[in-house]
Image 1: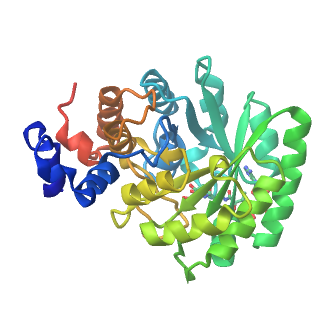
Image 2: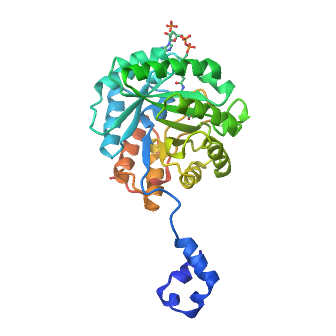
Image 3: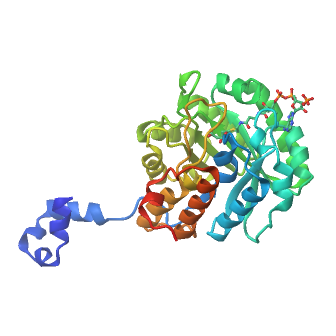
Length: 332
Ligand SMILES: CC(C)(COP(=O)([O-])OP(=O)([O-])OC[C@H]1O[C@@H](n2cnc3c(N)ncnc32)[C@H](O)[C@@H]1OP(=O)([O-])[O-])[C@@H](O)C(=O)NCCC(=O)NCCSC(=O)C[C@@](C)(O)CC(=O)[O-]
C-alpha cells in the first residue's frame, strides 16, 4: 500500500526508480483491470427475511410502507413476504394482504417465498409474479425448517415448478446452509452443489446460495462457488450472506471476484431464520451498497434513501440499525 502511494505520486512517477520492471509490475497489478463487474443486482429481502423473525407483530401498512420506500430508493427486486404456514412463522401471516395492498411499480420484481403447492396456490390468488423456493443442503435443517427430508423437499419443489410454469410464474431458488448448519455443523460443498444443480436444471432462473448462520469465510465461500459453478453458471447465482461473524462483506467480495453479480441483503441488517438458532441478520443493504459504490460498481440504489429507510423500519421495531453505514452517515 505504501509502495503504491509512493508510486502514484506524480512527482515520483517521473523518477527513474519507477522504470524498474518490478515496481512497474507492482503498480500495474494494483491499478490493473478490475476483477469484478460494472453493475450488480441487489435483491432486498428485508420485508421477508428481515421481518420474519420479529417477535412482535408488524402491521401490514408498515410492511407496505417499507416496500414502497425501498422501491423509491431504487431497489428493483424485493422479497415482500412468504406464503408459509402462519403457525410456523406468524409474522408472515398477512402475506395476502401485503401482496394485495402494495402498489406495483413498473420494472420492479416483487418476489414471495413459497414452500409447497399450497403456498403457491395462495400466492396465485394475489397476482404474485415471482416466487422463491427454498431447499437446504442439510438434512436436519430441511426437517426443522420445512418438516420434510431433502428428497421430499425436491418432490414439493418439482410440483411447485410444474404449476408455476403452467401459470407463467418465474421461480427463484434458494439453497440454505451452504457453509454450515445449526444442527450438523460444516456442510460439504458437494451437497450444496447437488441442490443448486437440481434447482437450476428444474427451471429456477437464479439460485441464491444462503449462508444461513453466517459461518462462512471467503475461503469456504470460494470452495462452495468452485463446486457449484461446475453445474450452475456464476451469472445464474446469487449470494445470501448473514453477518453473524462479520464475514458477509468479505464473502461477497469473494463472490464478486468469482463472477457472482447478484447479492441479497436486508435494510438495516435485519433478518434471521426462526429455525436457525444463532443466525443473525443479513448483510445490511446500506453496507453492501456502500462497498459496491466505493468499488465503482453501479447498483441503481440511493444510499441515503436506504439509510433513512433503515432508520424508519428499525425505529418502528424499537431497535437500532445493525450496520456501520447507518451509524456513520447522518440521518436525512
Ligand atoms: C413448509 C410447511 C408449510 C410444512 O408444514 P407442515 O406442518 O409439515 O405441513 P402440512 O402439509 O402437514 O400441513 C399442516 C398444516 O399447515 C398448513 N399448510 C401447509 N402448507 C401451508 C402453506 N404454504 N401456507 C399456509 N398453510 C400451510 C396445512 O393447511 C395444514 O393446516 P391445518 O390443517 O393443520 O390447519 C412449514 O414447515 C412451514 O411453513 N415452514 C416455513 C419455515 C420458514 O418460513 N422458514 C423461514 C424461511 S427459510 C429462510 O429464512 C432461509 C432463507 C430462504 O432466507 C435462505 C437462508 O438464509 O439460508
